[in-house]
Image (cartoon, rainbow, N blue to C red):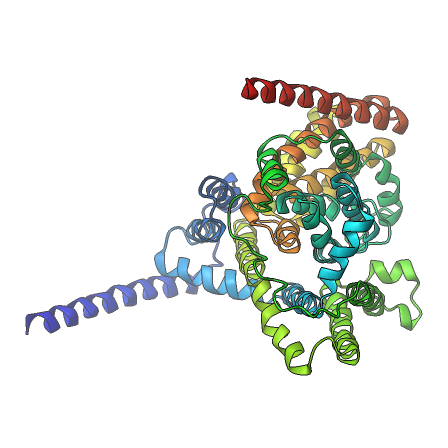
Length: 541
């Protein structure tokens, strides 16, 4: 009889405590507009830093992101338990999932997962892999082909990540290129190429954030000074032709090349992905769905931008909404692909419908990570991370003159890395750059390019960036492996870009800037390769 009584007492006490906490929260809400004690302070950037550090240490991304979310909610609620839970659920998870932009991107992820499952079932991926074995002879050729395709698909970074991964996985797998290396190649040609393409969703976003100036004209003028994007391309070509790797990537590539293990560690996310595929599959069974996807997604984006209502092509891209245009095109491409495969008799209607849940399941890890990452970004917004950075930059900017572009670059890297959003980063910094450097038009263009380059760099290496997450999904690579292996590569390019922006502010000559930056990058790679060769010799002895 004592046990039921004890349970009733415990439950009663729990209800009383929760009731008291709820009452406290309600009374607090009835007063003045709520403001966290940590709003607009450095503490606003601490939750994502906690999540990122934990992810890199523990190699477990879900719990790390969740701990960062809880930390942000605790800071925002001033450590009130019930309000913390309410913040996590309502202001974080529900607000993130119900947001129109995020919902559209989630839908596009699922649709692409279904399309990939259909292509695999039809035998298109296997056929393309067989074709690649006879036409792309070397590992370097496979990596350069992946790079080239990434550069060609410049309209949107999300679209780039998932499409390049779907097309090139059979090619890189056949040449024993690790999934970590594939994920890097995808990520390095997603945001960086969109940032130097005037016809892209990124150009539209940047143009809309410049007040009092012609945004698109400034974007175009800043392209030659976007050192991180341009040097990333040079880096990929150089390291591929020089045939060496360093950092954690070296282990993954050696393991893939010598042992045929494409993953090294973490979960094999593509296990049995081609099980039971049709023997009738042809290369066209991959090419046609991808061409349909590209064509209809571009059509969808310009349709949403008003192209068919008389708006110009570039203006349509400038006014589009990728979260609507991409699903718009993907749905049409998916329906036509199903009809095409049924007409080809490579699968039955029942088999085609079985690919729907299979494609969704394949995207579940990316959807979970993206949901948590979006929720974590909501926490930083609630804590006023943008206000803190804006105040700090306005106070510090007047005292540095020609070092400002390099400083803007570093600050942009830090913000984008911490918050996982490049758009939010240049949304904060571009107005500051324009205001501080408006009296020096040439330096203002260099400053804007430094801001954009830093935002891309931070976005590139951040574990909570949506582009980084989608690159892992596109390559079907363990997310923590992708982040840890690409970090040294991105930081090498970032260091060269930082020096390049110091040179840029003093010389203001684009050819000197690009020439010196390329020379520094190549010299750095030669030095790193020499060190790696010495390490290998010492290990062999």
